[in-house]
Image (tube, rainbow, N blue to C red; front, side):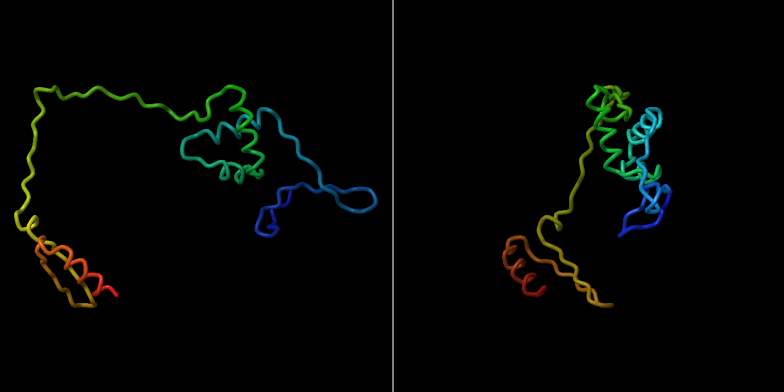
Amino acid sequence: MSTQLLRGHVNTIEMVAAAGDGVRRRRRKHTPQFKAAVVAACRKPGVSIAAVALANRLNANLVRRWVDAQERSGLPARSAPVSKPRPSRIAAEQFLPITIESSSAARESITIEVRHGATVVNVAWPIAAASECAHWLRTLLR
């Protein structure tokens, strides 16, 4: 079987000698066990169908048809393990709320840091003049 590239695609077609004109393509036949193994590999979490197809020297569209056929036969789409939510180990009485203090300076001004090469300029703009700050910033960034 050839693994040469044909216009960016991997050639996976088997060539056999034919009487008269030289070489002809031969259709490959895959066993049900091989198909099942490929589909099972596709069902693993985080595995792409294209990667499985390439690893097995198959066309991704063919593998997608095998997966679709198995899904239509009534089997689940993926065999990813389903995790059940675990009950909380912390009792409700043990829960302690946490308050986060914010600085009043952060609420009273808009802080902008402008870097240009080695120069760093920090600007603190009052929140009451936010629209003027936006206009200044748009002008600066032009």
